[in-house]
Image 1 (cartoon, rainbow, N blue to C red):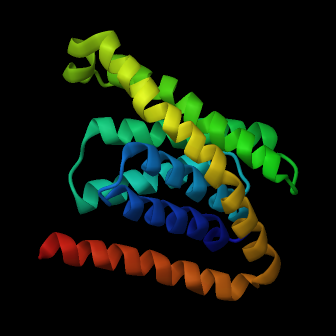
Image 2 (cartoon, one colour):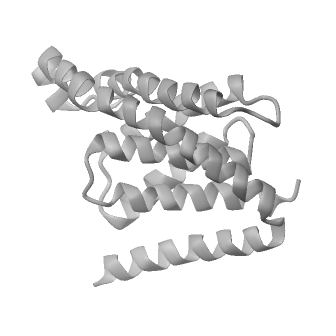
Image 3 (cartoon, rainbow, N blue to C red):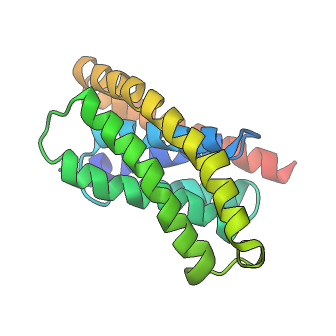
Length: 196
């Protein structure tokens, strides 16, 4: 596989997820949209580590466009790593079903809660999470993550249908040109917004 075919899907889906991350949307929507981008990305590049790479690009885009917040990075990477692990287990074969997309999407959202909490409580301790303790954790789990799981379960099959359609009906060369254009457009737009 050519290097461009490996890098372009990660750059494109990570950049698009980064764009979504800078929008003023509820956290559960951001998580669900991340799951959608990861599902689409897995159609383009079904390799272990590709979802984590998409998450890293989304983090870089968000830090470039706004500011660096360890808490945001922990949330994005928790979803990406959780998705990567589950997708590697369930998407090993070339063809996968909408049901597997639902299981991986919902499972990734659920699993990201534990990875996120491990990050903000132990890896990169965030004082607000430590000081407020269990009430904050329960509020986040029930008020944010539960809707995120439901939204992820709903949006993952839609991303699956879109990803399958794109894979079946678009040839690789036009898709690569579109991907390169999308990456350039998102980063140029972010640069203009940062400068102005």
